[in-house]
Image (cartoon, rainbow, N blue to C red; front, side):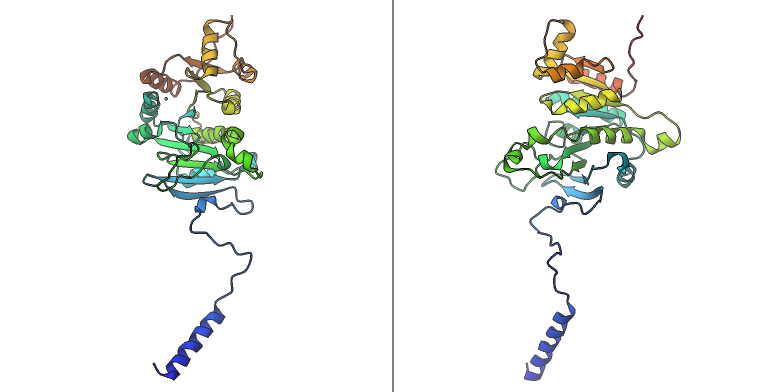
Length: 310
């Protein structure tokens, strides 16, 4: 290459550099090693939708939520975006093997949507087999994202099989100790959003426009921890049926108390909640998949009512 050609190329490079704007210090640079879903929602954006691919698994819709203004939150915009505005019945699982198969079968037969906390419970493989829609709702600070070839599985990791994931942002800063103990400190704060999401989905745009009643919502309660207490309260307020499943200490005590009033529930808060006279509780003393399938199917079809007092 001649000296004239080299000089011409150098001049062109200098001109191109002058045309390109220099990066500003406040410009956000996306780290290729960080999930796009881990970027903060900007400003007052109430929600944002992503396509989320589980490593070696299925594609899901992930919606990050800023639920700071519940009264004005645009549920309709999200449901229209996801094309879920027809109205669907909901079993709300508040987190056992073939027992979950019964729930999935009932939801498949009634075209219902299952809602849980987004982490592995055991229902995922039955939902995939039955081609059910499975929602996960959780505070974002309480979950972890799945990784390729992990050496250790985080018990709070988002699990494959969910078709839609709703993650609520927590604006409060956490210290290192809280982060290490995040399941105990954070799960349960999503209760109000979860119940309102189920109610809006059950209502449906067509049902509302045509004056038809909303679809049914059924809660399946395991009560392994006290994180579900606020969710039970919300379900009672909206007169939703709650199936109480034997297996945990609190549920066992509640079911035993129905047959023997001398049985004491050790947790006072749980005892107070479960003593609400306006609640619709349905104790289930078995983990048989056929029984739970029949009960869920029944409650998704009929509205429970209190017996008339004589």
